[in-house]
Length: 562
Image (spheres, rainbow, N blue to C red):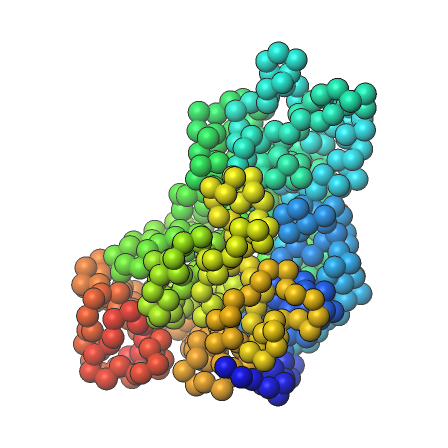
């Protein structure tokens, strides 16, 4: 594919006329677009995306039709875990810009009618954070060390970790310090990489500190926070061994009940909710707190969304569901039933920066392995989009899914940067494959991502076919499907205020998922053969480039007016 500078200019063209940010609780039905900043757009030629690139492409997102933008961490950080190891919660890393540029991003987004949600990382900080540096310099039992989890080791000379906890990234959750005289010292807890030390939330100073962090960014104008590891923070008193601790490492899921989902964490979210509610009462602008919560039971997830806690939490079970109508109906039903009981709504998600892209999952591919049947995966991912956008609640999109991007499964081992890959000795491929910088066009060597140095992760040759500029010229492109679906979702009252009613075969036993929202009927054919289209229904939108006539193709979804 050969594209010109004019093609790229079309992607960055001015959005529709600016609109004011309204005062409604927008988050209940919002579509939020996640920007992984270092891979979105490089405006300075360094090979790493930055806030200038975000600012440049905000009109593109407005035209796409989303309501808000969630920014991955951009704080000062040594980048051992790509910004989730924060060294300063009150600033912007020079790699990405500065506070003045961040203010411009917020102001421009608001001028376009977009909200800005920023990532906050309260479970742990960088080992280069001033607090941790002071803790290392202080003596065991000091006030400085009380801000983290320091403990003596077990066994002879304390050479063994204090307990049996395992890091989500692999290996022990403990790293040993070295005393000033060069002898081995105490151990400190890190639930992820060794460069990410867990805070001790039992110390009141930690809560006070994060109150100041929230106020800083709210005063700057942000509209909410995506909370990293919101099921973490508090640990069981005494830090005891846990019989299931090894599963944290082997599965990547937080199973250790002594380290995760402790009851005390709910007090933190009540405190944060009171703080953000006070801002809303002051100026009438609704803020949102959305949690990344790694619990597997929807009923337990719903506890985080009680009226005085978080507004939302990601429903990851939907993302993990295989391409199967019965499985989809089951997980959707359980999600709606559990979350609705909290008085909140479900936040649906099919992609994010931690999971292989949906196209590849539905294609039968996997990171480090075969890509699978990518054409099949693309059809299913397009259908899954229409299904997701028709569900009650909010939706979170991940950058590049509107382009139909598959996972980059064959990155050479020598370029992989995810600490999960390195900590596991290569046993777990890690998340780099979904973080490869975006293709904006097909003309330049970096597909429009940067004009200077090579991108921080290499882009495959086949990215040229997925560039946003090229998709502007193809009416059947995935980009056009996203725009059409988001526009319809915004325009149809039934997709904002109607409950879901199942239709069709009981339990979707025929391979077809079918449900109504007001006058909108959504049908998803997961079965092996075409099925008859609904009678007396008017087609509004189909995931298949060829509109269904008489029968709806397999691996497709459609919206009908009934």
